[in-house]
Image 1 (cartoon, helix red, strand yellow):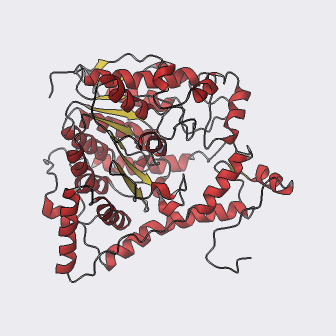
Image 2: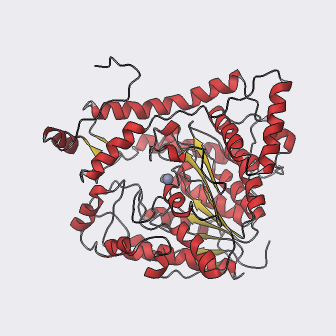
Image 3: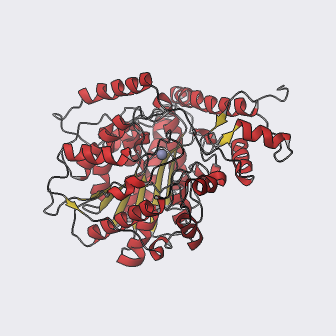
Length: 509
Ligand SMILES: [Zn+2]
């Protein structure tokens, strides 16, 4: 353990950010409060240093956003103005306290990063909201106003003399705002694990598939549901950690979203990272930047999941014992396909990845298997993106009740699933990270892996396409920001062209 204290940020001014016109919003004040209380109850903040948050100044926000967005957010001082503002935004709500809360979130992240860089703390956790990783430029979206993590990274470089920063985003949703904020900045390495589902998942863009244009962006698009903590940690060992060792960041910022957790609100259509997986990911990142690894809260919506995950992540940052993690003998099919693609794509920039890819190719030969066929991409989201853009352009965005809340039965199922694994935590067995041989043997690409990849990816992708098709056919009240009544009226009035279903045949009637 370090002699320096762990650092954290928690400030109740951020609880004032609360949607006043819709009580069903999943991003709500208790997320912060419950996480803070849980970590206190687990005594993980005993001896820690609370870093005071403060409202960020305009000049600090301008490290990543134009004054136009800052002024717009300041002007939102009534519920009507707030809701009106969101009619051309993707999944956004605001209230009259949003400006203050968003500034406190940024100010808190900056002060925590400063404390780490100035050696006052050993790692830290900023429990903040609104979250930030979907926001960029003048675009506030996805519950995010300003991009906390991108501003903190740029502040470290511009104001604190840090040479290189890595951002690691394991939230279930793409860190699209962070990517747009840092993609032209070679001093910032950005990694995002995110639901992609062959592009049928928000933000419906090819841009978030694995084939990034630059060496300092790693995307791990998840086409299948229910990848486990062992799958995620395997990708760390195969790709992320070698990349970061070569990049040599002086500071790591974690975009800590727990909606990739096992049985968060998307249940079996989500990911399946059990809480201790976040602990192990944090532990491994701390090995790259000891004492300089700072987590910043992003998503996570089922309280029983995100409190457990946050607590385990803090254990990892504190280097406390963690339950043993099971490293799978094979990486799950859809993710394995993605990893082969990532290694092929990035190996030209990273010698260690090229080396690993060669060993995997030799293994294919030794088993008498054909080589992996690189770059077989599939993109299903074009029509969904077109409809979202159309609805925004005409200010027809549905601003309330985007998805139904979990009912009591679903909440019960999730709690039971999470309790089940908590009961099985194994603190007794020492965890050994996988060796090179184990890692290579996880990657056999054969008939079984291919069928796994298909079976793991197709149910949720089909479900997303069905939702879209049902919406355009008039069988659904909404598809997130697309509202049946607003849409139908606009089509009747000739404002919108009617959208067509995604279909596999030309004779769809
Ligand atoms: Zn998310």
